[in-house]
Length: 446
View 1 (spheres, rainbow, N blue to C red):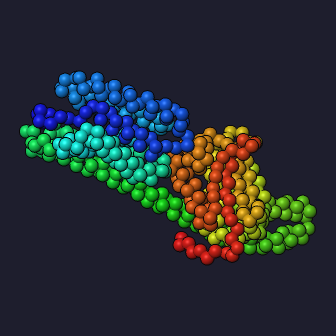
View 2 (view 1 turned 90 degrees about the vertical axis):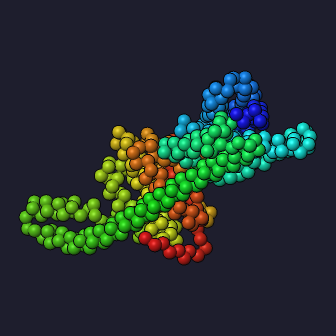
View 3 (view 1 turned 180 degrees about the vertical axis):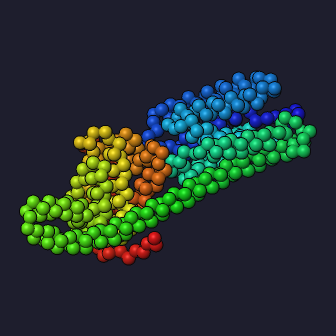
C-alpha cells in the first residue's frame, strides 16, 4: 500500500482540520436564537476531544480505518448539533459539508508541509506555513459559505441525500489510492497520490457549493412565482370586488326608489313587511367602510363581509388618505394579505367572543404606520429574531410567501415589516412606510 512509501496525514492535523471546519460552519450558520454560551462551551471542548479521539483511532488496525473515519464524522455531527439549534436534517447537511471541507484542508496542509520538509525549509517554518494555509483556506470557505446560509433554509431530504452521496464519492475517490493501487483510478507514485486527494476533495467541495447555489436559486424562483401569483390573485380579487360593489351600489340606489313605492302601499302591515325585507336585503351590499381611499374602501368592505361570515369582529381605525401614494396592487397585497392571515388565525379560536381583528392606519412623524392585531392562535408563533413567522399547517409554504409578498410590497416604498406580541399579548403585524414628498412613479405589471 502507498502508506509504506509516504506517511499519511498526522492524526492531530486531521483533528485540527475537523475542528476548524466545524467552527467555520458554526460561525457561518449562526442565528440569534442559538445560544452563544453553549456554542463557545461546545467548541472549546470539541478540540481536545477530537484530538484524543484521533490519537486513539491511530492505534487501531488498518482494517478498522473506515470505522474510525465514520466515528469522526459522527463526532463532528454531535459538535454541530450541540453548538447550533436546529433539526437533525440541518445538522446532517452541515456535517456533510464540514467533513468535505475538513478533508480538503487536511490534505492540502499535509501536502504543503511535506513539500517544505523535502525542500529543507525546517520544521518550524513548515509548521507556521501549514497553520497559515489552515487559516487562509478555512477563512476563504467561511467567506464563501456565510452568504449562502444567511437566510435560514432547512434543506430537503433529497438535498441532504444528494450532498451525502457527493461527500461519500469524494471521500472514496480521494482515499482510494491509500487502500489499493491496483485500480484504474489509483495513483501509484507517492507525490501524485497527494495531488489526487487534494484535487478530488476540492472538486467535491465545489460540487457541494454548486448544489447549494442551485438549491437556493430554485427556492428563490419558487418563492418569486408564488409571490407573483399572490399579487395577481390579490389584485384580481380587488378588481372583482370593485366591480361587484359598483354594481351593488347602483342596484342599491334603484332599490331605494322601489322602497319608496312600497311605502305607498295602502295596507300598513304589507307595506311595513315589504319595506323591512327590502332594507334587510340591500343592507349588506352597501359600501359601509369609508376611509378616504377608494381602493382601501373596497378591500375593507370585502374583508368585513368575510369576517361577518366567520363571526369575527373587525375593528378599523383607518386614515385611508395617508396611503394615497401606494399603487392599488401594492395596497391590495399589503392590507389584503395581512387581513387574510389574521382572519385565518382567529378562525381557529373556538370561542367566538375571542375572535377579533383590529386594523389601525395612522400617520406619525412623516411615516404611515399600519398595524393588524389579533389574538394569538395556535400555530402563529413569532420567530425569536423578530422575523415574520411561517404557518405551521398544510399551507405553510403559501403563508410564508404571502408574508414575503407583504415585505416586498413594503420594501418597494422603503418600509419595514415586523411581527410580535404587543403589551396586551395580541399578535401584531406592523408595517412602517415613509411618506414620500412626491408620489412615486411606479409601474407594476400584473
